[in-house]
Length: 427
Image (tube, rainbow, N blue to C red; front, side):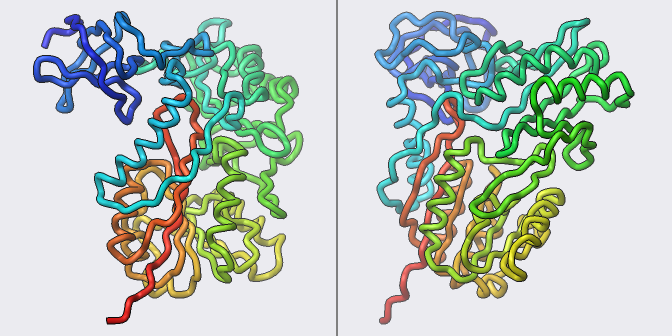
C-alpha cells in the first residue's frame, strides 16, 4: 500500500470507533468523519490487520444525515468525533452498538429502554491538557490522533463553569509551568464548586512564585480546591472551601481527580434505577464502588468494595457520619480477589460498576451464586456482553437495560442493566 494513495469510497456503516467503513478492491477502509451512504475521496494512511486507515479528503456526495457541527474546533480536536451526524441517527447507532455486542455473545435481551441522551454544556468533568510556549499557554485537548494540543476557546459539551476555567488557566499557568512544560488539568464540578488537580507531565518543585500564581488561579476561577501532583500523592495548594458530592442524604468529600459520572443528570438517573431495581434488598453489595456514587443512601445495609485507596478513605469518612453499621467499606482488588460464591451468600442484591475491562472473574463467581438481583453499570458494550453471557449461562435473565450517552458526540456509550436469577423449574 502506498501512503496517501487516494481512493474513492462508498461508506457503508460506522464502526465502534466512529469511523466510516467502506470496501474497496477486497480491502476494508476506515475513514474518520465520513457517514453512511456518502461517497468520499480518502487518502490511505496505514495498513493494519483489520484494514486500511484513511484520511478524509473530500465528501463527493454528502449524506442526508450530515449536519453542521456546532463546534469551531470540530475535525481538529480529538474530543468529539460525530458532531456532524444528525442526532437521531447518531443516537440509534449508539443503541445498535450495545445490541450488536449482545447478539455476538448470544445474550438474550429485552427491548431497551429509551436512551438517556446527552446534551451540550452538561459535562461536569474535563481532562484538559496544558502546555507553555513562551508567555503563551495552550489549554484544550489533543488533536485527533496527535500529541499536538488544540487551544480551545470554548467547549460545547463542557459545563459553563468548566468552559470559563480555560481562560483562567491560560492567564496564570505561564507563571507555574517551565518553558515547554506540560500538565493535565483534571477538573471536577462538585456540588460545592470546582475541584482542580494539576498533574505535571514531569516532576518539578512548586516554589513560592508558582504557589502564588496557583492561589491567584483559584481566586480568579472561584475554585473550591486546587491540588498539585498525581492522584495518589496530590498536594492541596489552595482549599477555599471543601469540595462535596451529595448522594441522597450523604455527603462525600472526594479526593482530588476522583472519578465521577460525567454528567449529574446521568448519575441521578442511574441512582434512580438502582434504587428501583434492587427493590427491597436488605443487604446490598456495591462492587467497584468508587466513592459510592450509585449506592450511598440505600435504605438497607450497604457494603462497598473498592481497590482505590483514596476513594476508600473518602467513602469511609462518609460512612462514619451515618448510623453505626449502616455502611461498611472494604479495600479490595476484585480483579484478583473477587467476592466468592460463599461471600455473596450474605447479600440479597449486588451492584457492580467496573472499568472498561469489565468484571469477568467477579461475574464467574456471581454466576454460581444465589444472589437474586444483579445491577450492572457498564462503560463498554463488549465487556458487558461477555459478562452478561457468563451471568446468563449461570441462570440469570437480562430483564432491563437503559443505554446512557454521557459522552455526547463521541463513540463512547454506557448502560445500566438488571439481571434476575431465573426461578428453578421442578422436573
